[in-house]
Length: 269
Image 1: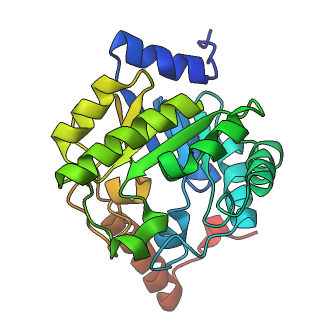
Image 2: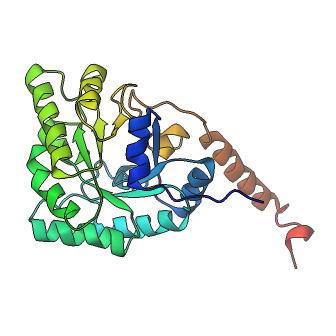
């Protein structure tokens, strides 16, 4: 008899920090990859607005819309039975006013099927986190290198190296926790600072380019499989290289069609 699979909840994720168990997170934007991640036992799947750069070919995440996020979230949710699905709130979906932020967070849950939402910022978005959490929508914060702030930061740069920046990031982490977020992404910050933040707050930290001392880690699935050659951040490890296999398959298809060996009798009616 097959083992019954249990859907993970935010309580499970928070319990993992308390028990010292590392939390695993990967991005997904479609049904096939989400299904494979879920079968492999991933704890959380992030439907990231990184879909803009990874799948759509934009230079930044800024052009991604709410409708696009809902579309991709639906596809990922259909591919999961156990993982907790977290959806990014795209640029301009929560920055204008609280009413719009609450409505858009609700859409990701109601229309997209997400179990939680993520938004970027620290003290400056504490009120927004509080307003969304008050609707009983679980929220994940995101501080450090926040891609939606790429223009202010002057590019995708490590944050928190200066003492003043590090102090602000500590304040941001505490503000996000106090506002009611159940977890916090730390991106592109020094490992020692990430360790200090992780030990200073009670909610789980999920690192990306933030060292080993975070409570969990998140990476982009296309990066770890060698499918995204446009960017190669230092914090990415290629766990498999399937791009060569895919290209070989495509080249074989082209060759057999050109030669007239495909389709064969076994592929015809």
